[in-house]
Amino acid sequence: MSDPDQHENAAEPDAGVVDSTNTADADGTLAGEGSVDDSADDAVDDGLLSRLRVIEDQPLGDRAAALTQIHDELRARLEASDSPRGA
Image (cartoon, rainbow, N blue to C red; front, side, top):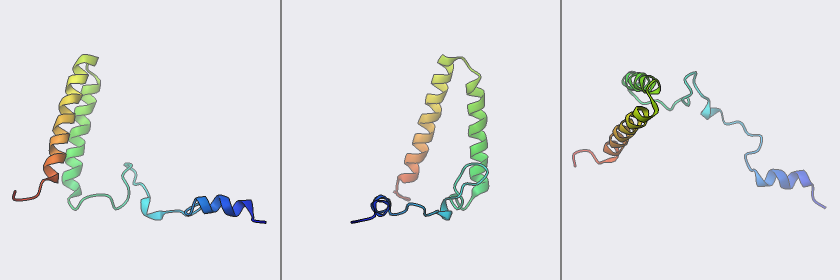
């Protein structure tokens, strides 16, 4: 006869294992997740957060348009970072 606890743990190979590499910093980002130039990223984040705070105080229709604009800007920035350099 087999031990039922053994089968339960076999289905979860990492059960009970703590992954210390994924600890969150105070701001919610994962430790070691930052880029080389964190100060520039922080400035961009602060600007984005400021814009979002202003948008949240606007009427719903205006909020939707402003959030769509931010979405489009972030998507364009992300897609530009995916393109090969010098192409």
